[in-house]
Length: 480
Image 1 (cartoon, rainbow, N blue to C red):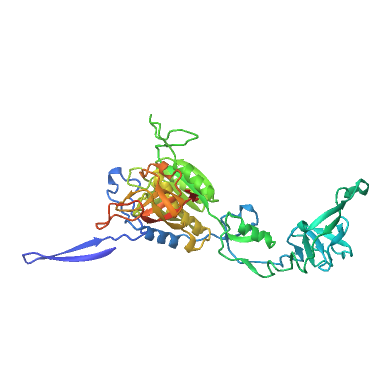
Image 2 (cartoon, rainbow, N blue to C red):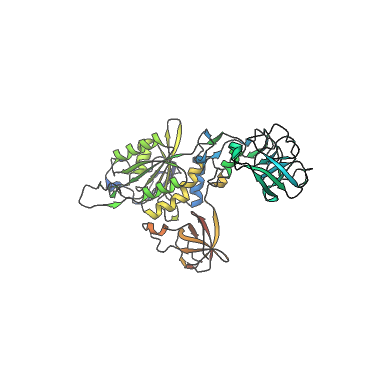
């Protein structure tokens, strides 16, 4: 708030001093929403929230979303998406003892080609020396018996004889083989510590455990049964609006004969979240009244680390989310409008809860807008909560060549495209009409082409063959 005094002098003897109070809103300053008990006619005719850039919005998210605590998890297949909270080092040499890296027979390097008796773990202990005239059968990764210093591959031998019926449990087993070549000392042997030495760091703090399996395999390889990771956020998800009906339980909330429209956002966002490995608390469809909004947000705060809502973010008389956050939960609205298409009314807030601050995102109700803004804003927030490095929280971007013309808009547009690998590099084809309510524009889309805003000096459209930066949201396929 700023005071400004203006002195107005009249033609007469008197002087009038006028004091004007100028109120300047800064990001997060309370309150910019109207009171919930006021009449609809008192609602804002212009948004009280400044229109900020995409970069400014992401900076506000980075400043106000912080990683959750550290937990200990068993090393199992479901570690996907966690981030290591500590360096991981080998507690022992790998391998621990001399072992073979092929299927074959442990021999002495001095053994010449010829016929040898075959020993196995059934009839001979590896802690005993292999007698002259014998070889010990080994499988890849298995330890070598005392006295052997090389391994000959199965392909370099010939079967001579097998055990008969009278030999009991050994029936059909190899009895004798012929060695066809002479192998040098140390051939096909892995010595202790040749893969990893005790104390070697195999994974670093901040490394992401991906679904590719490499990180989980590395942890198992060095015998790590448990590992410290940053906790992944639990997401509370809800849709708002009396006009919505649940696909599986189509009960109208509108109180009139109009059937309503199916809630598209909740199932599509739920699918995207679980596909990324996040646990979701489904809070359902919330009616357009204050009590329902308060109850749903309270449940979300109790059960999750981040709240994700769709609808109720624009200028309608039943868009209650912002005032409920401010006036019922003492929350802070960090931004309420972003200069992007689609997704202009995207809202980011934080709510103090017990000993933490929980982020709340309200995405536009139009289905395409909700999914696009999910990838642009929610994915970075989830990754920040989960301990990802700030340099990695945004989805990857690549340069692509357009196969469709795209008209420019005054706002930066994230145009839904299908990115493919062509013979000369990556190409992108528009998914068609980009109306924010047309969720079909995201069916099959694996990229969001970043179309620059229209200016006085820019062309009306990007021509076929133009190169644009594109956010990758799915797997890239081959075109040819």
